[in-house]
Image (cartoon, rainbow, N blue to C red; front, side):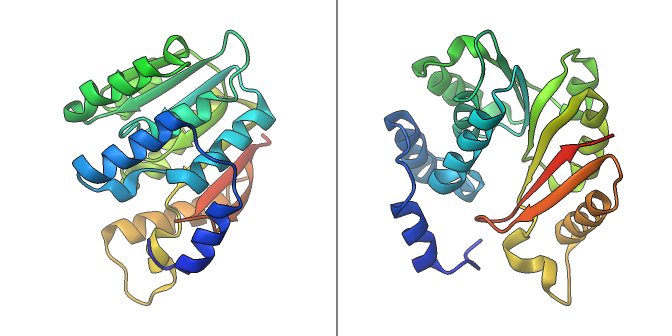
Amino acid sequence: MDFINQDIQRYAEQHTSEEADLLKTINRDTHAKVLKPRMLSGHLQGRLLSMISHMIRPKYILEIGTYTGYSALCLAEGLQDGGKLITIDVNEELEKVTRGYFAKSAYQEKIEYIVGNAREVVPALSYKYDLVFIDADKESYSTYLDLVIDHVNLNGIILADNVLWSGKVIEAKSDKDTRAILDFNKKVHNDKRVENVLLPVRDGIMMMRKVG
């Protein structure tokens, strides 16, 4: 993920609104205590997620891939009154610490945190989403898109993280995860159900608007 110039990254963060104290704590604790802390959205991307959520003012948000809860709390900032964020993660080991962060936030009552396999959980839910954030196992990205698309409102927004995959998407050789990301990016770009723009923010965010 260090393929973006670090001086540019720092400059962007220095000129971006600060994250809340709880988010700073999650950021710090995750890097100190949890495996693969690069999975955390972090300051710059977190503020972008919050900004998008505020612009949409969603009633219902779906997040696939909770990790330690940082991105969920950023997305929850834009929920309208009476809104709800449903976040799903398969990792049982992080459940206690993540629920603890949610309990300390102003959004505890608006967050439904489900530990389970998203392939099984998503079809069992009955919400219609205004905003979806996909940030889980890369091999399943295309599956997740197909699972959620019919449950997204017209003009709803779907975001998928890590679509530049540390710059590996433009390398000559590719591993299994890179090929999955390449296939997903191609699928989205050719999908008539959405309009899309690939944002070169942090590790890349694919932004889609449902049009059909």
